[in-house]
Amino acid sequence: MADDQTTSTAADPPGADPDSSSTDERLTRVENAVERIEQAIGRLVPGSHADAQARTERRLDRGSDVAEQVRAELARAKDEETAAAAAATAADTERTERRELHTRLARLEEQPPAPPRARRTVLLGWGDGRS
Image 1 (cartoon, rainbow, N blue to C red):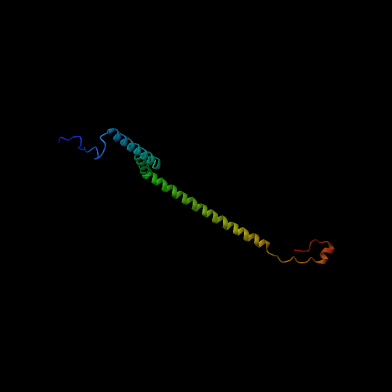
Image 2: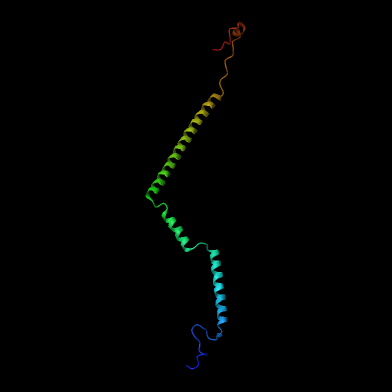
């Protein structure tokens, strides 16, 4: 191998200039392009893997306590009981209102006319004459 200048190495592609300044320029352009791509991805997908893992851990840690689950079930049962009591009260109120309405309607129905006053009662001044 007497001809060392014409042989290419693994770092230099065949047909490349032996000038290292052009290689440095290409490397700088590639690095700049990679940085721009990283910045664009950072804007599109905010957060990192550590943030995602922290959110997952917080989500998995909450509500796993048996006492918290029991409290939630007791609160739900209490809410159901309150709703049932409110429904019963509303039904009682409606029944009472209907009863009152029927009573008022019965009083408003047409009543038979009062008997006529006797003429002698009116002339003698003995009062109304009705019983």
